[in-house]
Length: 130
Image 1 (cartoon, rainbow, N blue to C red):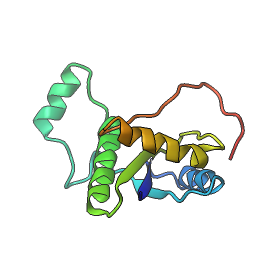
Image 2 (image 1 turned 30 degrees about the horizontal axis):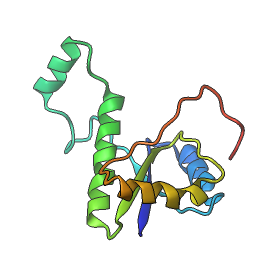
Image 3 (image 1 turned 45 degrees about the vertical axis):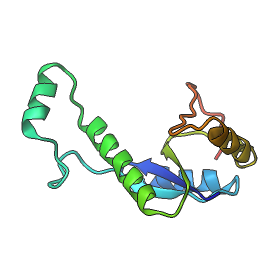
Image 4 (image 1 turned 30 degrees about the vertical axis):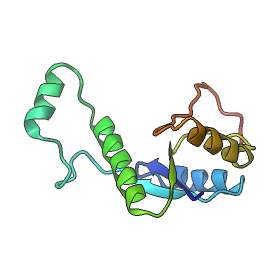
């Protein structure tokens, strides 16, 4: 089974490189995808939608950029030959045994006939890993 791993990064070369190193340290290759600014001329939000969202306190340029980046990743995946994609952002911490656990996670993914699968956790500290 072919798996592509994508990392969304917003114009931060040091974070992108740290993510490459983090995944390389467990034997996995990572594709970095840059997020796009909310002011990008071809992807800017409809001005009316943006104004309405601002009125109710639901607008964020960063959130718009992040969403556009995730859409870019999905489009890239759909054009690829990979059967599965994993999407992370540039601040994710992974387990040292992530590569060894991945086949089991993917087997269960298919066994349960899932479409998206979100793996996550909440931590307020870094353990100092790469």
